[in-house]
Every structure is written in C-alpha cells, then in structure tokens.
Image 1 (cartoon, rainbow, N blue to C red):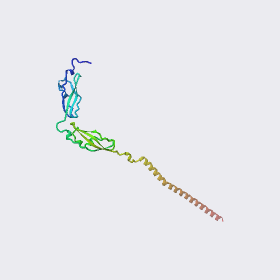
Image 2: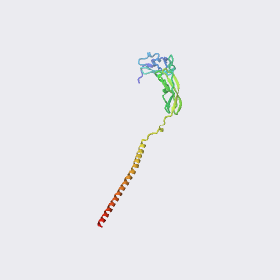
Image 3: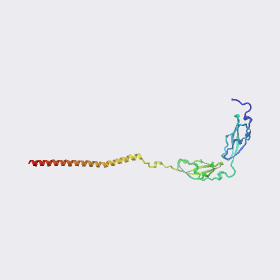
Image 4: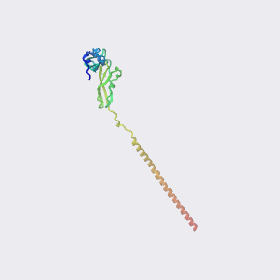
Length: 234
C-alpha cells in the first residue's frame, strides 16, 4: 500500500458545519450542512451517512461524510431544525370521517376501511393501524387508526370494528353423488325383479296347463278309437 507523500486531503481540508432548517417531511441535501463545500478539491463528495429524521417538527441531527479524492474522509454531525410550514396544516384542513367496519373472525381489515373520506386526502397521505383491532373472537371491538399527512401532521382516531363468526361449511348439506347412484340402481333393479317374478310364474303355470290339456285330449282320442274297433269286431 502506497502512502501518499505529504498531508492528506482530510488534513488539508476542514469542513465547516452549517445548521440546516427544512420543512417537515423534506430531507435537505447534505451539502447544505457544509458551509465551505465549494473549497474542497475537485472530485470530493458530500453525502448523508445518517439522514436526519424529518417526520415531525423539532430539532434533530444528521451525520454527513465528506470523501476526498485521495480516499480520506471527514465525518461531521449537522444540526437540523424541522419546521411546520406557515399557514394551516394538513391536519387542520382535513377531517377524517370514521366508518364502522365489519370483518370475519381472524381477519384484520385494512385501516382505510375505517376512514370514509380517505380518497379526499392530499397525495402522499397514509392511513395505518396504530393499534389493530382484536379479531380473535366474535363481538364488537375497536382499533386506533393514524392518518399521517404529507406535512407530517397527524390525526389519530378510534374505529369501531364488528367481528362476525364465519359461516360453518359443515352445516351445509352436500349432495352425495357417489352414494345416490348405487342406491338408485339397486332400487331400479329391485323394482324390475318385482315385476319379473309374477310374469315368470304366470308363464310357467300357463305352460303346465297347456300340457295337461294336450295329454287329456290325447287320451280321449285313444279311448274313442278303441271303442270303434271293438264295435267293428262285434
């Protein structure tokens, strides 16, 4: 590793920290926190190492890293004042309308369902559960919704949530196709058998009667012939 001859860029340059004032929700450029950034060697970069939290009004800090062309660095802390813009805030100009929610057991509904006029808020507004409702059992409960506007101001509201028991599918009477078909088939076969049995019996009885008549007729003919032969002989 080569050690550069002479002093490093970090030794020859000393960043001058400048406090920053920014509107709520706006992260300012890191260069605004360095007052002499224009005196650094060409190729020097000034970036946020840890950006400031600008989500709410007040005083905070951010960490800026200055990287010089020779690779050496300076890291400085910059004070940042977060201000609410002049004039009425978004929270003042907007009034959320709370809407009761109905949801099945075990299902946490979107927080937006609890705000009836959510679509009228400024672009960039978020609606989230701060405290989600307890939907583990049927009944009436509440949840806390936080509406955060683009300027960082908020509205916090209580939303009523009715938790309903889900319909039990076991109470439905399903159609058992597999069981119905065989039963139907057996019933049809049984009916057919009931019809066939008398028919078979009747046909059998008629056959016996016809055979008996034929045999009786044959006996009569034979007897008649014998009588005639006897009469001739006499």
